[in-house]
Image 1 (cartoon, rainbow, N blue to C red):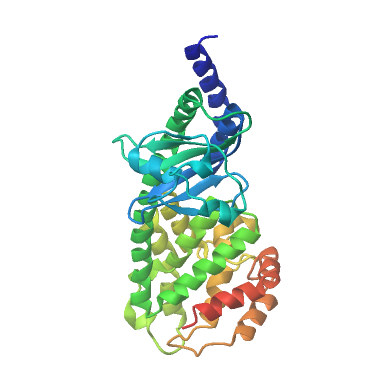
Image 2: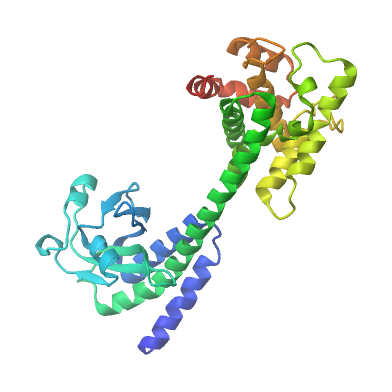
Length: 363
C-alpha cells in the first residue's frame, strides 16, 4: 500500500469512529484516542487557543486534568504562534520545551509532535499534540497523519466556537426578556436567578441530559414574562386579590407562552412551555389547563417547585418573606398534591445545596 492509499484508509477508518459520536467533547476525545493509537504515542492533547490571554487550554488531554499553558513558551505555544508543525526528539535538550508542565503533572516528556489547528481564514484556533512515541521518535510521516486528523479537529472546534458565540448571544437576549417581568413585578434578578439554579439542580438530579439542564436554567427565569400584559393596579396591589382580579392574573401564563414561543428556537420553546405550565399542579387543580401528573412537562413540574419555594422566601407587596424552613415545610406538605412527589424527594435529598444557593444569592 502506497502512502496515499494508507492515508485514505486511515481517514476512512477515522470517519467510521467519529460518526458514532455526537457531542463535541466525544468527537474530540475520539480524535485524541485515534491519534494516540495510530501514532503509537503515549498520550495526546487537543488545545484551544485564547488569543487575548495568550494561552492554550486543554479541551482534551489523556490522563491529565484540564491545563492552561502560555503560548510564549513550550512546544505547543511555538506551534500555535508559528502555525507550523513542531517535532521534538529530545525534550529536555530542546530550547522549545517548557519543563514546567511536567513539574506540575508529574509526567516525563521525551518526544513531542505538535501541529496547529487552523480555521478557514488560516487563523490559529488550537494545537493537536502527541507525546512520547512508544518506539523511536515522531517523523514527518507521523506529522502528515496527525495533520489529516487535525483537519477534522479544527473544523469541529471552529463550529463549536461559532455555536458558543451564537448561544451567548441568545443567552443575553433571553436574559433581557426575563428582566422585563422583574421590572414590571418589582422582583429582583436574584429571585429569577435562584429559580434558574434550583431548577437546574433538580433537572440534574432527575437525570435530564446536559442540554436540557442548560435549557431549564436559562429558560426558568422567564416563567413570569407574561406579567408584562397584566395591569399594574392588579399586579402591584398590596391587598389580597378578588376573584375577578385573580382570573386576570392567571392569564399571564398564556400571555407568556404567546410572547415567548418560537418554533425554531429550542430555548424559547422551553421558556414558553414553562411560562404556560408553572402554575399547573400535580393533582390537576392548577391553571391554565388543569393538567395532571405527567401531563405536565418535566420542565413545568420542576419550575413549579422552584418558583413557589423562592416566592415564599421572598418579600412581596402582599406578604412578608417566609423563613427557609417554613417554605420547605410547605413543599413537603404539598407533596403529591401541588407538586410532583419524586421531585420533592429530590429537593429534600439536596436541601443543603438548595440552601447554599439561597444564601449565596440572598436578597
